[in-house]
Length: 293
Image 1 (cartoon, rainbow, N blue to C red):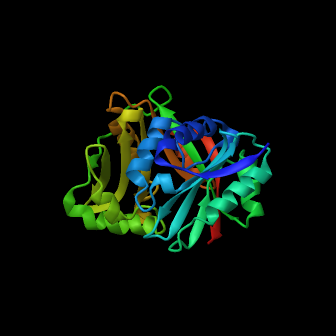
Image 2: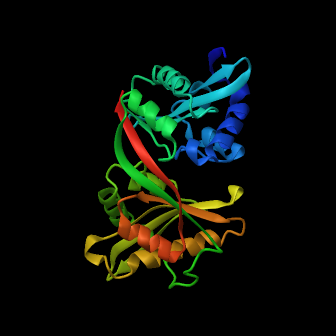
Image 3: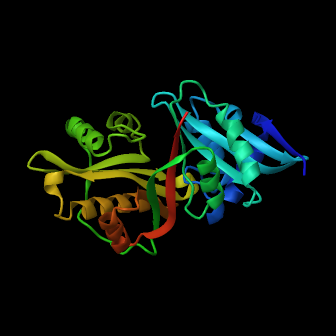
């Protein structure tokens, strides 16, 4: 086999997206950042890859003209971080190919970046071993859970209302203190609200004591619970369950949405128990690996 590395191009992005979509459906190849539908992956690149466009962010490994591997990155200049998409290797025993591909990609990371992360399924031994070989260290373990209308057990709940603008500042404070290192700040969440992205809140005696942020993606029949938090003094009162079931009802009010996902730290056993009780099922257990650039 003659291995050739090639910088991606606009013309080749469709082919790369199809390769990633096929590979990411296999647990042993799965990467948490990436989708499983080629059209959705292309949409993500167009909408979210703003600091470095996708055509400049991917490298392919080829045997003659056949793609056998792909690796790319999503850069965030403001946070000085990069999320690695891959490496995806057709032969998942190919540690040498995976290492060559990722090492070549790391050389393309912009100077503005301070840290780089991998996010493989724990069954993806190839990427875990590649990361270890190249100096990535484990940071945390995360669990992806999903539910459908068929698995949802909490069919009714008291209604939860969208966050009134009068409580925006309280939401920002609660979110930023609950998720201080998040990929979205409270300010950024509020700036992005629209018909398919909503914050719900529980207000007691004029104070915001809990919130949930959800995103609907009816084009691709899916939705997600991105964040929710409850004030420390208000926990243990069922507020989290109320917010979660209310958010699920809103997401499933979109006729095309079939599945909803969320991500939680794997060691948060209390939260995982609550999600399962409502009807969520574990789909992926992931490990976050990080390296300073």
